[in-house]
Each structure stands twice: as C-alpha cells, then as structure tokens.
Length: 227
Figure 1 (cartoon, one colour):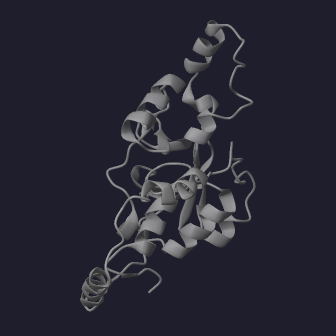
Figure 2: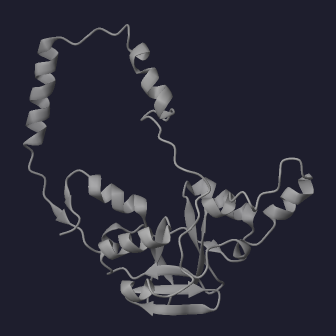
C-alpha cells in the first residue's frame, strides 16, 4: 500500500498500479551523472591506469601461495550459511529515520544531510506528519544556484530560504508490510532515491532507499530477496 503526502496532508492512498496512474508524481531530474570510481575512491580511469605502477615492485606470489589461497577460498565456500528470506519493507528499512522539520532553512538542511552522511531526508510538519522529501539533488540544482560572480548576499538569501520552497512534494510513501519489488518499481518510475515509510496516521517510521535494496541483494550470507 502506497500513500502520497503533501503540505495539506494525505492526498492519495492505494496500490502501486493506482499510484502510477495519478498525476504529479513524475521522475526527478538529476543534476549530473554518477562517475565510476575505484575501490580506493579514485576515479576509475586513474585507478586502472595506476594499477600496474602501484605494484610494479611487489614480488609475484609463488604457485604454493596461489594453491593455499584457492584452498582457503574453497573451504570458505563450503560454509552453510542460513538463508533469511526478505520480502517486506520492514525487513530492510532504516529506523529510526533522520527527518527535517518543515521550518528548517536550506543551510540547516545542508548541514544535517552532510553531518549524517545521507543523501535525502523526509520533511515533517510540527505534528511529525510527512509533508515532503528533500534530496541533495534538490539543493544542487543549477537553476537554483546563484552564479559565482553574484554578490555574497545572494548566496546568503538562498541559504536562508525555507526547505518547503525546494522540497519534493507531494511525495510517495509506503507502509512497512509492502512488497519490496513494488517499492523498487515505484523508485524506477519516479527516479526517487528512496521512499519514506509511514504508519496509518502519516507519521514517519523509517526510510527505504535504493541502497538498502542493493545491499540486501549482495549481502553475505546470501539472501532470498524475492522469495
């Protein structure tokens, strides 16, 4: 079951199929593409070009070392991990969840997202009900940012704007017992990085992101994500 919340309260409640038919829930425009990076955090191209030079002086492992490593890997593969079937949002969602008050400024929102290391946060009103979603992409949209040559006061005015002026609203949300596959479909449809998880009263109880779903797919021990 999905709901849509805005500044005036709950605007919709229904199935995924019904959600896809209503207007006003379109795809988010991304500010820039994601560039590949190496495992050490470097740009993928530079990482690959330096891969040989970084280890050019290292001694090549012997055949015995290779055999020992392969034997250890084979032994590890024999471990019988218990499989844990995941199928519902409640299995994967983050809780407690970081939220932003709708009275916050853009500067306060930027600080919170940076300090907590998250890319988005649900926005709630004074009664803790969901009213929107703010993402880092919203904060960095080029058409909202002043040009570098503009006066510092212009930047200050931007930072003092209210989050309600740029947040994503109305915003889809999901209940904890919803099927994960349906959430994945809504994320593909809307381009959102995740969905707030709410109870029947519209109070935010968690957040499920693309990263949560991907992490479950690749987690070890293996998980029967789709049942």
